[in-house]
Length: 102
Image (tube, rainbow, N blue to C red; front, side, top):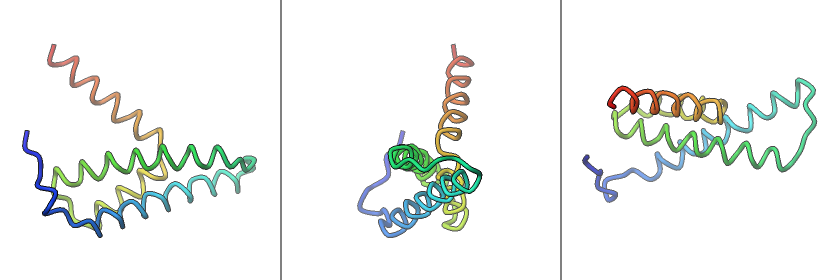
């Protein structure tokens, strides 16, 4: 497996994708608050951590497939919004692929 040279990474793009992921996370939590859920700081912090993890997975996927910035940004925002749901979907797909190879 090829590992891309870190000297060729556009770090500004990566930072912007993380900001978009964070905005997706905050938007998702704000939507839950608007729908009557009680605000809890620790829940917000946990949601942000999970969303950043999901966004990181999307950034890796976008890098691997050489996605355009706009598409990667949209996917990162959705990853921030979806958070744990996206991680669970990716986990299920990964485990399914592993079982197929056995």
